[in-house]
Length: 189
Image (cartoon, rainbow, N blue to C red):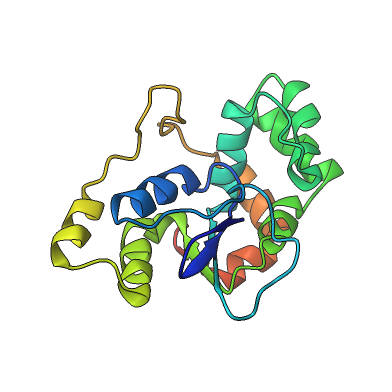
């Protein structure tokens, strides 16, 4: 996790974590060491801990399309061989569901987020977080709302295709806890 003055932040890759780090820099939050992808070693109950979650199907799709090397994080790295052996997302999803169903839930849980912000609500969730810890006025909030998602061309680009309903249903059953806890499944999520 990254230690900021008023909170700690860590999240799995492909959840919007790079945008959050850029937003924190934009409002003047400076990190005091740590890596965004590293789950906390021990929780400091005096500090707010923030993490991110993304719709399980979308997270798996991003992981499949963009993961190229291990991160030295066993909970996440277990997926890399499955992705590399798969020619299509559907093959990857089948391997995921057969070999490690529920793994994304275990990944999210490993970050011990006292505050969890959904990727789908990220901009306003982060604005509210920064307002709560002090550091975002109305002008900065508007700037954050307009902060680009992509800073460098090598960052993950949004995917245009969607996950077929068959795979959405199977992932939903495997990641039932996440769907319920973070209110996925409403409005056709």
